[in-house]
Length: 331
Image (cartoon, rainbow, N blue to C red):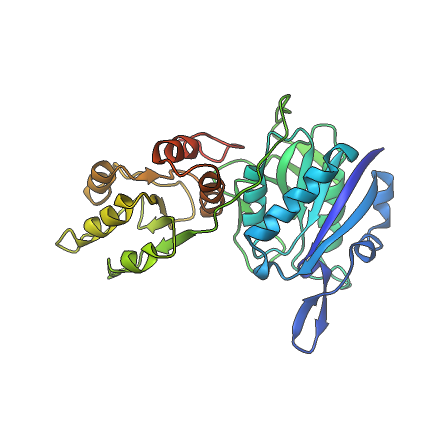
């Protein structure tokens, strides 16, 4: 039987109702007691890395999860990370960049309702995660949730309460479950030259969502705190001008200081295409902006953090950004 390491980080799956609301309290060993059938599929050992709400989980925690997997990589056949849903897509994307070309599966799962509740999605999600992690075809970083296996760089939380909380954005689901039976849609190639672990991320990345009438002076403020800005533009990539070139000048000033600007879209599907309209084409060409095309915002944020942890050179940043990692960009 495959030997799997479960890394518990908290989240709703491990929460109990307290006076101030749901709080992660259930330990990794206690979580496993709710799915006794898992013993038919694999042998499991657990590590309680932390026990927090995923709203409070960010870059330093991603690095700790990566370190835990790296330290234990040779001892296990796969890894299951239990995690809150709110930032799960960010963690899945971050691990896709921090642990590249992993032939072993790294699976992130959680639930919308605590595993301690009678009616919950937690037990099915967790059991499916172990079934996938134990499968000989499984490889790389994925989210397993609501009977779907989603590539780590393509996942997004699209519902706040429903069991089908996660969607695979502009890329097919890798596999699905039918009554805990795993059906693959895509056979992913296992890397022969991995895993490759990375140890640094630069947290100074900001997402700026365009709204009608936004003031260009925001860039002056952000310049002091951030090394990169991701502009969530209108439609396929429209950046406003409002009858003047103040916006272009503000972005130009930001870029002139050796900082990075990436343009994406705030629309959920089909990505950006700044060449379509004059409001996007001119600013992209004149300022040599990076365009994200079909990447998710979660992937853009974490990829930039990884890239800026590797280099500060603009040519290298651009080259690394347009190098596809785990099918994150397909333009």
